[in-house]
Length: 195
Image (cartoon, rainbow, N blue to C red):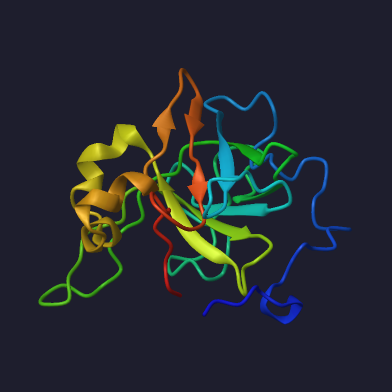
């Protein structure tokens, strides 16, 4: 027997006051050399568009560095003027979201060498999605098709069944544009990560 969800089993819709801001999707300012647009839609398990989700992104700069104290190499100001590494975009009435950013660099191997050695991480953008019906955010990554060689040795992609890896790779839609649709459940569900 299946019962409908009750209000205590969901965490949305959200009071979005103060969460989105006008330049939230701008990880880099408009006009930044090398800037790209990354976006897509958020859909639920039935394939219906989710108009009130919130997508957050966090990424390294093109040199693979973070201007954050948690970067084990130390915080480093980006060489890209105005790069802030973080983006936030609510979905619109058609479930669409987007960010303006620059392609990230690969992250170096941080594990000790020997039996625990691992490869560097392929360039990627970390993504959190908040939406109604979720008890907590879901987390995934966006990889980019031009880094296919790096994908072959990325430790996380290697752990994902091959048939589902494509859900983590954006699709090029022309110069400087990438599409990354997020499916929260069901057939074709995006691979989400346990933290």
